[in-house]
Length: 385
Picture 1 (tube, helix red, strand yellow):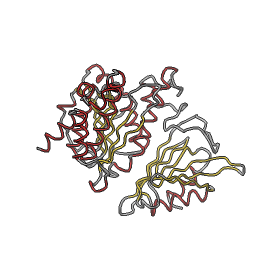
Picture 2 (picture 1 turned 120 degrees about the vertical axis):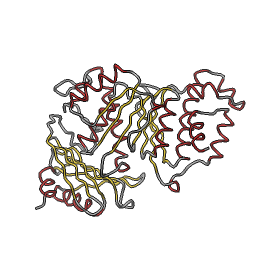
Picture 3 (picture 1 turned 180 degrees about the horizontal axis):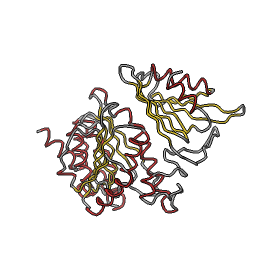
């Protein structure tokens, strides 16, 4: 039996958390497939969930069938498989020439896995499984429990990692992945991104976190050194003046205030970054510009004007990114009850003919109607002159 066969036979039991096959070679078959253990009336089974566009297909398999399914799919349909159990995490990569690379690392997790068929949502990072950076940031206690006042942060971190999991296929499968995080702050999500991509996924990753506050950057550097995160770097700097050292595959901008988000998006576009994740904050610019007689009865109410301006700002940003060849979504980041700043712009670089986008004229007419001239539009237009 080969290495993959032995590994699957060892790991395909009730201690499996999940197996995720991605980097599809056959879009008709599916974009991704997840497999997890479930307890049914007749014992332990493994449920596969196959994602084909917006459709989802479920099927249950015995242990032997599940092992065979993973082997077949890695041979014909997918180039990557991430397997996580209570005892180890495994990354399987298949090159374009069919060469298979397997990386495995032991892990210790005392958390109980819910094997019920209709179980509650499973997080990527789990309570009861100690993680060094979460302990260092005060989210977890040394034994893996979540601090009482950090449950919202713990859920936010996991939600963020789900967004990253969804775009793994868009990042380079070989070589080093370079990420720049503009306005990283205390870097809860920066550390989470590094841990997920490097430690759990086994990817060669370099992340540069940038922030204006020297004391915050100093603490981030200390924690990165403490955790042994050698390719996680932090530096003091401004988004608008930062110049890349190398190709940047993904640009992240979380809660950069007002037009700082626009400068981060402009940098990403200029660099041709493959993925952009941005959670905008404090969208004041359009609120100060917007003037539309047709909407005057609505805009006379301050709080309504503020909220409409924030939504309009992000919708225009998404449209401008589409014009630059990005497939763009606006997604709910965390529940509205925790913060009104809960939208995430996720953009993936695609060939222009594959992007369903607004025309330049249509978006321009909309901005003219509203009487707005957002910073991102000016920055991108300046670059096109």
